[in-house]
Length: 340
Image 1 (tube, rainbow, N blue to C red):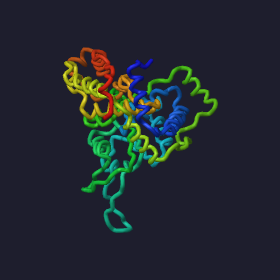
Image 2: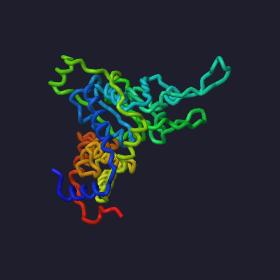
Image 3: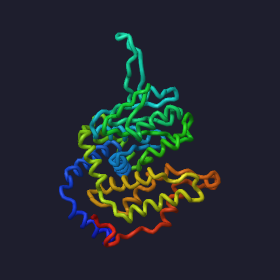
Image 4: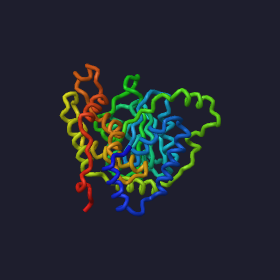
């Protein structure tokens, strides 16, 4: 149940916002519904993935093999339309294999630049932690600046640009940890988890036959997705909720269990994720629940524990939950949230 002060704020926002794109909400519902036909019983993960991409960010899907990470990424790419590329990360992959580079053209008798697979609207980086950090770092510029530099040439990536990466848990053989700078560029880290028994039975029965990701039809074109991203970022955020997010990010930087807290980029991404969550729910105004629903997938993977805390059995999610629980949820002031 939404507290009355926030309901009052929402009514004010409705009166101030005309021409809200109701058609976009229907398209988003259709997109998520189509993805849910491929990955059964994971509606919350699908919604969180769409919220991250709608925020203009990238998604890291981390889980054990065989639970549908790659399938989810392929399905999302299909319903979004635009150009899709897949990079299978392996131990022998080089940076030039990702961003592109000069190759010899025998017909022309000269070196020509060959674009890498990053030149697409939706890129699936499959098993990203199977490749060494040198190749992983080739994605840093693309993820933040939306450009790539190779052989002294800087080229803009297509817009929109979204990276969906999958990785296996670090305890698996042949995996390399992602650099902290790269983890900070993923807006959310999500885990799919094993399906509930009833959905696993339904998957095995395959009645009616479930569609494969490649059989899904695009719902929108890239230009429409960019408009949705702009609309999501226009969702109103009360100043007290901004202060609340900044306060929680600040205490992660001084928590005794943590050696690395949330960056300013993390705070910005948290707000954007909350805006996108509200937008997916058809609201023009974020609630404290939107921040609470997104705090763990946005912040937890950016935090680092001290060795002593890790040895004591703590993890970043446990620490983050404790810190969030210690901060009271703000209530709106009659004047502080008004636009001027």
